[in-house]
Image 1: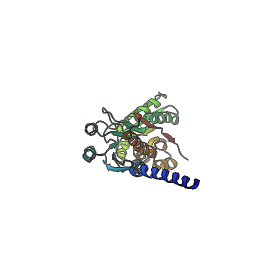
Image 2: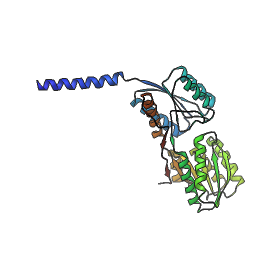
Image 3: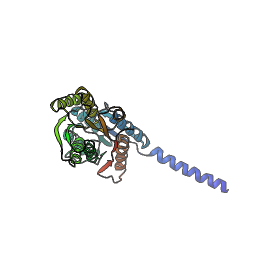
Image 4: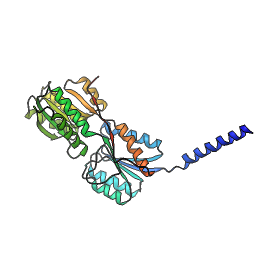
Length: 296
């Protein structure tokens, strides 16, 4: 009789667990990502897919390809489909405002990941502490240049995350006041960054250092330095995907890269959306601390 009771209890527990998993609400989440042409965003998307599967989420990902109009259209489509939540990595921190406002009016919560939106409220923002990473890069540059020389910056001013990196870099570099920033110019894609780096190095022969807002900018600067025959320049990047880390190992001029962890960001973005939909409290900012890679 005791065995029968124990067996019956076990069956009831199993049935309860089965019922909870079988009838748990499957949330629909739409995600509009900046690009899929960069390893960072490939890793981010893959992590989101994996976490969505664990959390019983029906995830739909659209790729904006750095086109604001496409991103706005994609978000509009998510709203029409009445998804439960939207995750966005904005193409333009200000330009995405209209899409977020529309989602809010439709009662759909929005979470931003990697790139913040300006001027509109969101449930939370999941991102690397870009300012802290920039400060690390600035301090490291100052140390590598022994406190003197000239430095340039390749930026992407439309993205708030990059603005924070550049501001942090200037703050960190400011601890070595004898280093002068001689140029700050945009270079969004690797091709654009190459042209920018070439122009900067032509205008500033013997440039001591260059900070690239992302891997592509830094890798482009490495090529430009070879063309300029400047073997003494020190280049620091930001993102730290495998190609960049390999270049730090193999290229004399690529001194270091601030490393992000897109897998953590993707997981945290999905988890934050699910927690919010389940009525749990979510912090307004979920930071992911950056690392520094200086070679093997």
